[in-house]
Length: 573
Image (tube, rainbow, N blue to C red; front, side):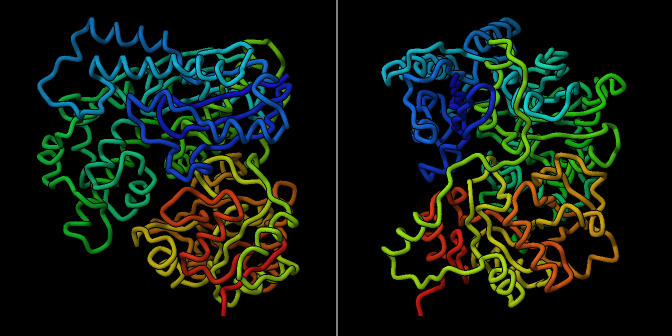
């Protein structure tokens, strides 16, 4: 039985195909249409389904929509209407500040949004789908994307994002094949929306929380944390002062007065006016997040639910996750790598299998390699249509050698990763010992802010020698929790250590990714360092998906070599 899960209500459009409870393929629309987040999130874009991702899923299995028994859409119009009606009865929607033209809070845009969601079912029917369609709770899909594919039989489940239908944060107990909701925190009390507004205040987009998190390490949270109590007045309930935050308003004046800094029109970076003061704001926001998460986690009975699953966009905050892991509050922490909205496509499909159809869980998430794959023969045919020099080599040994010589390598192997972080199949690699590579990579390859850190991929069986990760938490397999670099190792790997002496490491096992493991092992044999610098293979665009994407990025950046499967590609002489 095939089940198709879809996310399309907001951003991070995605599709996931499950067969008899086992994930066969999952892919984000942005990797195929080459548009970040798949589409721009506005009330009138809701009806835009991830058709490229849908077709890629069907093609992977050689089926059509007529062969799909169930489709799950990770949003419930019924839950949205209930939340809106309750909100309007309280009069909380009446305020003095202006809303943006694309705000979801106006009645007109709310209706557009709802019409777009409802149109999804009709579109699929017109395309040939004849099975059963399910509108599903957004947060239930988030929760299922974490717990129902985790290795745990029982777990506390925390979902934290901007908003689902009306909840911003939800707590569940996971037990066997069942999720039981414990509590919701609802709009406007949203930690995710605090991040969206503050990201824009600092000159980034609403999607750039990861950049603000990186900036936080350069600031002193003590300078601003008291001011954040004016924005979030109660950590334990996530209560937000609406007049201070003014979500979906172009008005930033309350924040400008609060921090005594103007809203930036360009992103903060080293050397811009008052960059240090803005870094203090980012640091305060990060501390607020950590305090709020620990306050919310106190709602769980950790004796009965000793393990934790997390999902939602805020669950991508690896700095906060690292502190949760190292705190020892839970025996283990699992965070599915597409924890943001894309992951609800996986959650929707799995939720139908377990809780709608009542089937037992029979899939455990062990790696993120769920996307398309391109074999050596196909790669060779593509390279034959270029003028690029290329040769078939022992790719792991040759790339390890080139890394020791200081080269930056585009590494394109196997199935594409699921989620926003490259995990060793669509990566740019470099020598972590080279202190100059960070500046080179940020400025001349990735064309991004100079303060942005880079991450290491480390042999899992040697990680403890180099990092304090708080144990072997599942979150560490997917670059979803920070670790502290051991003091005696810090001088040896300057390119991957952040300002606060942390790393966002990926623990690589031989079972999870044999070729990548062998590359790192060969680099270790040559250097004594069992890790490489790993960042996503892209340049101001979505991570590359196809060999053609990889070649294009290779040619438009200062990457030295490209490892496409077993083929090593050089620049024209």
